[in-house]
Amino acid sequence: MSDLTQRLTALTRDLILIPSTDSRPAERSHCFRFLRNHLEAIPNIRIELPESGGYTSLVALPEGIDKPKILLCGHLDVIDHPDPDSFRSIIEDGRIIGPGAGDMKGADAIMLELFCRMHEQHPGISLGLAITSDEERGGEHGVRFLLEETGLRAGIVIIPDGGSLNDLVIEEKGIVHARVEGKGNSFHAARPWLGQNILRHLADRLSLLAQHFDDLRSADIFPEDHWYPTCSITRITTSNDTVNCIPEDASATLDLRFPPPETPEGMLVRVREILGPDLVVTEIVSADATHLAPDPEFAAITAEITGNPVKMVKASGGSDARFFRARDIPVLLSRPLVGKLHATEEWIDMASMETYYRICETFIRRRLGFLD
Image (cartoon, rainbow, N blue to C red; front, top):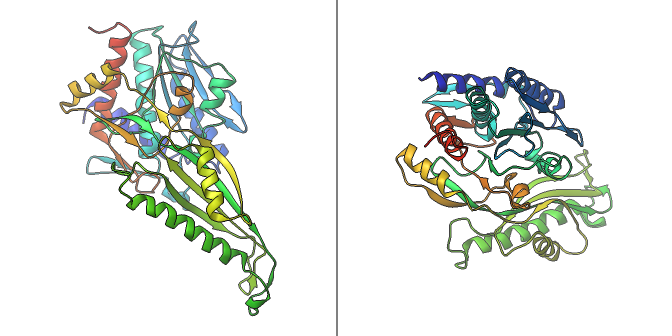
């Protein structure tokens, strides 16, 4: 194992140990302190920690440069897991395995190491770093806030949060997160004839909604794999906690993804029509589909270093790239080899971490004039 791979592995495992989830703001703060401790050793770097809605971000820029030519961007928040002891890691078959390893503590480690080494070797280089803590909840208080409220800008942005080592993302689906709510009357479960069971009614309507999107998946009008609208039911809840009582309320959350020409407004109209007027659908987060147009030089460097051809792919997931693209800032979206994202067995391939580091390092050097 090379010295670089050892450093990236150690950084990743240290970051995984910090359960920086949405429900643990103190741990998110801990993670930012960890990052800042590494960055403060670099001279002539200014570090800012802006906050919005209870979410902190970290922005590191060289002194005298407000708009770096290249910005590295990621997030440190990870998905909640009920067992706190799951925030550990193991190394097995050349992989770091642990919550957040692939999304995106391993990539954070690469960006941190890359930022520090590049500034040590080339003081004043026009390279910035931005790390947020609310990407998994939509990014409104992270990248959106940094762009709209603090004025963060860049010539081009590298976000290692999509695609794969030789897969560069050119399109991302749009997204809608929505809440569905229904109200009814509470009565004894032994007398179901007394009224409508709102929980059962919600479940029945959600079944129709799921069938509608299942029919789209099986239709021939979407020839590309997975490049069609989807709807995932992620939660069904009620305030009732009594086993022999019909609830007076029920709610659910939906995660909708869709390619162009679909829009968030059109998807919400479709959902409301299927669910019916007695269920209230409220938008939580929405975003249009995103076109990225990756840089040809980055693709050429990827092929050169990996020895394999590069594919331009369309992604079902979303990322913070959409906020940069809304301001016409180019984004490069690829990453090391990862798997089992959002599971406790999430993993990142260690050899591909060094390869991805070399890809980004070469691109930065060439783009900024430090390498022929």
